Length: 335
Ligand SMILES: NC(=O)c1ccc[n+]([C@@H]2O[C@H](COP(=O)([O-])OP(=O)(O)OC[C@H]3O[C@@H](n4cnc5c(N)ncnc54)[C@H](OP(=O)(O)O)[C@@H]3O)[C@@H](O)[C@H]2O)c1
Image 1 (cartoon, rainbow, N blue to C red):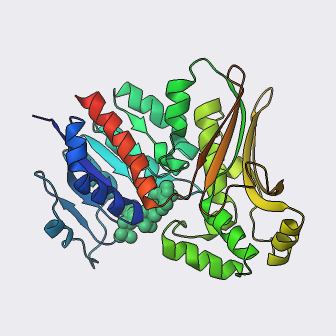
Image 2 (image 1 turned 30 degrees about the vertical axis):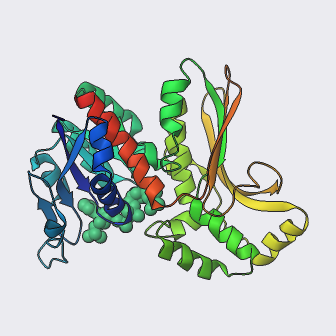
């Protein structure tokens, strides 16, 4: 008999719904891994919440509907719901991450593991939350915050012991990359943003992607985890793609170049320099060959040289897989 893992989904938008679907559809596969997930709680901002200790079914989902009454406090619900793990999937607040921080604190303080899709938590509070998690003997995991389910954090944590990361750079924002590719085809920036939003991979406010804020949050998150940089997104030197025109993208292509929004971090003597800016890269280079919603991260280490990971054309399934990977790690810990 497998031990049920009681899960609360905090946020039930694009990612939350896909995680719920994956947990339901893949339950036989998960049972074979010795784990049986039970979604006991779902919390939203404007459609209320559901808590069913025996497990939420599709009928219960009908109870999530726009509510007139004043919003219930999410942190209180997280504390009150009896569960093993809280999956945080509320929108990114790149300027303070206040909500995700209080949700994660409430979960850890009330003895629950935390799986975070919201990168605000590690871009603003990695040191605090990881210290709180170890004090409470709970896991704080966040694989899908950068490059969805591509195993960036798990790879560094598990496969690069003792290696020092000296620098890393990547094309990390799907929306900007997709928009630049569409501009090459002659689609206007505004139109391309609308297409990205419709497809569900743009941030709730897509300006955060185009202005480089999402990349800034990701590079701060990576630098905090890999280099103990203690940096937040506001401290990243940042330039987005708003000023880039279709003509510039097409002129670069005629010279066998591409424009890519590149995010980078370099360990200096006393601190870490994090930057986001549009760069011209050769079409034939690794960064130039990363098209549409694909992304890439290249890491330079002292003992293992350079390693690059490319994620090809991810969709919501790959984001949800990143969450599922972390939930499986929690289940193994919980056995
Ligand atoms: N989409 C992707 O491809 C992707 C990839 C990697 C990571 N992420 C990250 O995953 C997170 C979720 O993205 P998404 O696309 O699913 O966003 P979304 O579609 O906007 O959904 C956000 C959900 O969070 C709920 N919510 C907002 N504030 C809340 C609060 N204070 N308390 C409780 N619930 C709250 C919303 O409630 P209502 O339903 O009432 O609005 C909604 O259900 C974001 O942080 C994003 O950066 C997304």
